[in-house]
Image 1 (cartoon, rainbow, N blue to C red):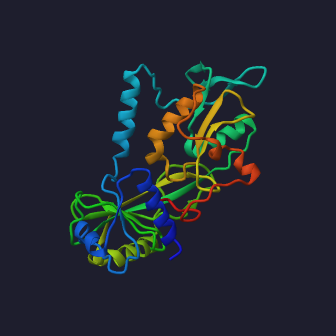
Image 2: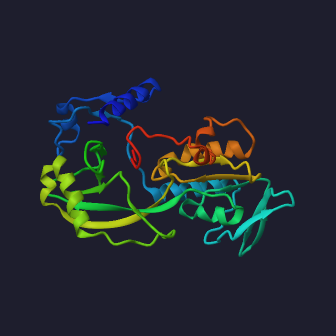
Image 3: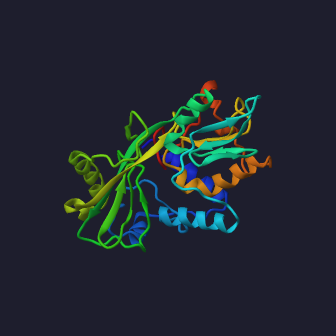
Length: 298
């Protein structure tokens, strides 16, 4: 299909960067993930060091590490606005617990990044988009020793992994439900959707054709028009560094993003250029193009 050559190029680029990536035959892939069908797969890449992480453990570990270095974290305290001097430079934030002053303010507001538009008058092209996750329970075990599976050839570009025992976590990597306002409350998942995604999963995991729905939940992405984040300074608002619009990629990128934002805030050279991720690209039309198309969380 149309994603074959982009995948081939991505695997080659990873190998050229020193990332251990292997090309597998269908037989070799089946040895690693025996509950999956690979007989008609056109290209199979395997990254031995890839995997997944517990989001709560990662976030709390980041927080503990920051506190050990003297960072003060205020939970449940909403920022009500930016403090600015007579020249328009951001000098801090206003909260219910008082005003906090800083030489540089870093805003990473996720689906609430639209508040920046209200505070600064600068448009923030981001919309909240709800996505669903299903935990299917089938007759065969999907063990934690088995690799994560990503199917670029399926209609939903499915992501599947072990959820322990005989349960498999499944989600789509395509466009979700746009919300009128930022809202992280749980949404309804129609049974038609469960059946449709379950059928896609059963195409590759035949024994899961009779799987039941063990649990399900929803989450909300902060999505930009090109499905890539906005990172760095905003020229019209000196003293402000932003990070929003990760469009489903934020968790895996967070260690690198945190590092380059710290470098940017301190006026240091960044490990990678932030120019392609500047907010101005939406005004100039220089949007980023993903290898697998718009809306691909891959």
